[in-house]
Length: 586
Image (tube, rainbow, N blue to C red; front, top):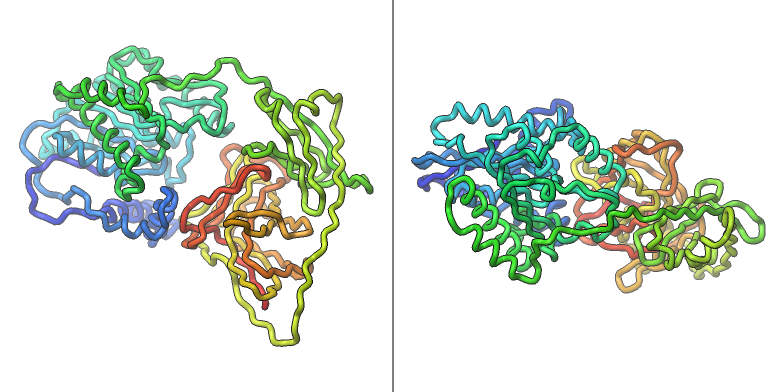
C-alpha cells in the first residue's frame, strides 16, 4: 500500500513521477514469479502519453515531472482524518498522485489501494477481482491502525474512488457504516447498460450479489461524472448510486470532459488548458468535500454553487428513455450477381457510423439495429466488387431473407516496369514484440479494423510477407482476420488496393509472431500505404471475458482504428504503432 501524509519537514528531495510510477514494475516482479516485468515502466509510460493525445515520447518527460511528495520524512503533529483511495482499473496511487498530495497538504492521511485483481494480477471487471481490492482495503486499514506515528483519527474516515474504484468504494462503504463520506470520480457506482454485453454481465453480477445498499448508508456522497459517456451508444438501463442514496449528496457533470480527465496524467502533461482547469476544479471540489464532512470546515457549499454557474458544468444527471429501443434484425445473403457464388466476409455497415458486421463463410449475415436506424443507409462492400447502397426502411418492408447481388468490379492495374538488377530487401513497419502494452480485439468487435502506416517510397516494391505480433490471446475459438492495404489521401486511408481477400487465421490462445507469405498475390507498391487487420470471423464462441492483444511499440505515425468498415478511420495512440511488419524487395 502507498500512504501520503502531512508533514512540515522538507529535509529531502521531491520525488519524481517515475519514483511513484516504477512501483508498479517493482511490485509486479516481486509478486508474480512467472514473468519478468523489467522495462515495463519505460514502455507503458509511452503508451500512457499516447493515450492522452500527445506524442508518445512525452511519456519520458512525464517521468521527470517533480511531485510534491517526499519519501519517509517525519509526519506532522496533530490528528488527521483518513481518506482511503481506491484506484481505477489496474491502477495505483500514481494515477491520481496530485489529488492525493493535495489531500495530504490539507491535513489528511491518504491510504492508496491498488486495483490489480486476484493473484497473479490479471485484472477483470469480475466480482472476485473487484472484491480483491475491497479486501486489500480492509486489510490495509487494520494494518494502518498499528502505525501510531501517523496520528490518524479513525473516527473520521472517507473513501475516494476513481473509475472502477468507485464500485469498490461503494462495496467497502456498505461493509463499514462508520465511514462518513464517499467521493466518486466518474466511478462505476453509476453505470449505464447497453454499451457492451461483457460489462453488462460483470456489473449485473456485482449488483445482484447484494453487496451494495445505498439506501441504508449514512455517509455523505459526491459524484463527479464525465460528459462523453453516452456519445457512442444508447443506454438500455442504469444503476445509479446517486439516485438511490438518501443522505447528503451532490452531483456534478463536466459536459465537455472525458473519463481520463479525472486522473492526474493529463494535468501533469499539461495536455490542454481546459483539461488542466477541469482537474484543478475536480481536486478543489473533492478536497473541500472531505474538509466539510471529515473536518467540519466551511467553503465546500459556496465553491460547489459557484462551479454550477459555469456553462460546462451541470447538476442534472444523464437522462434517457426507460423504454428499451425496439431491435431490428436484417437477415440476408450476399452473392456474386452472375455466378451466384456465396460471398464470405462482405462488409455490411451503416454509413458514417460505428455500426457494422460482416457476412459469414456462407455469405449470410444478421445485422442488428434499432428503430433509430430506420432512416439510415447501409453500404455493402467487398474487395473486387462494386459496393451497393440500400436504405434500412426499404429492407424492412421486404419479407424473408434479403438477397444481395454484388457485381464484379473490373479494374486495371497500374503498369510496373521491373529492371534486371539485384534485389534489395528491407522490413517495413514496427518490429515491436512488446508483451507489456498492446491494442485489443475483444468480444463483440467483429468487423473492427486497426493498422499502421507503412513507409514504402516511390520505387516499385514487391511484398513478400506480412507479420504481426500477438502478446496476449484469450480467444478460445480460432479467429480469422482480413489483411487490407489502403492508399493514403490527405493523410487518411482511401481505397483498398488489394484485389483478393487475404485471410489470416489465428489458433485459440496462439501468441507470438504470426507470418503470412504474400508472394503468390504479386502485390507491388509504389507509394506509402496504411496496412490493417480486420476481424472477420471465428470458429466457435468468443466469450465476453476474451480478447486478443496485438503488441504496440514506439512508431511516429500512430495507430489507425475503426469499429466498422463504413465509419471513418481514426488515429489513436499518437506516436505508438501496432507490431505490424512487411518484408519487401525493391
